[in-house]
Image (cartoon, rainbow, N blue to C red; front, side, top):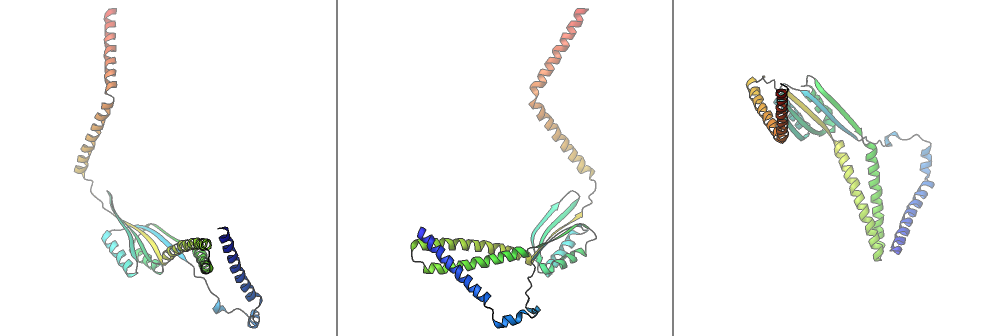
Amino acid sequence: MKQATLFLTAMTVLIFCSCSSKSEREYYAPSADYEMEVSAEPNQDKIETVERKLIKEGDISFKTTDLNETKTLIMKSVQELNGYITKENVYTYSDQLEHRLTIRVPAENFDLLLNRISESVEKFDSKSIDVFDVSEEYIDIEARIKTKKELLHRYTELLKQASKIDDILTIEKEIGKLQSEIESFEGRMKYLMDRVAFSTLNVRYYQKTNQAFGFFSKFVEGIKNGWDVFLWVVIGLSYIWVFIIVAVAIIYFVKKWRKKKRNGNN
């Protein structure tokens, strides 16, 4: 195993040294054309600009006069803008009905979707839009994947040259570790790209029901609640019946003793 480690280390050093020497030769031996171009102004057309990777999320809440009409408008807009619904919840309260939607829409259509919904809203209860710049993380992951893949290629070449079992096992272990790390980075990259490509909008809208007071229903409910309270009182008394009996007995004997004492004084 020690020989395998030494072999692996030696081959890795040779690979890095060869790459380093090649880079140094290319750097310190510039061509004549390069020397002529140094004094010239840089070509603006060749400057590469890094596209910013932005994740956009929003939350809006508002009141509507017609739940079905509002839902139809939202669903139509989502369909036309190539979005989709990832979550839908309906809540029923005593004084209102409420719908909640989670919408994913292509990033370039996020503002358009928000504007279409806003056109039908008289007043927002709340509105929050957040933008997260993940460009730095994206570039870092991209660079890590590239480096890991280059190292994986070098280990693969070493594996072809290895002849001893210990060397083969050691190199295969390193290859497996690199492949696992690459898959992890690629998974994170895929997640970021999905969040960048599709923005998320959480929509909450509700309608007041304006129900009547309902005297009869509340009266029946009051009777039921009163009966429940009575039952709980009876249950509570069942836990302390011994104390009640003792208290009644004490009061009885005290009164009897006082009555006897008054009769004796007379």
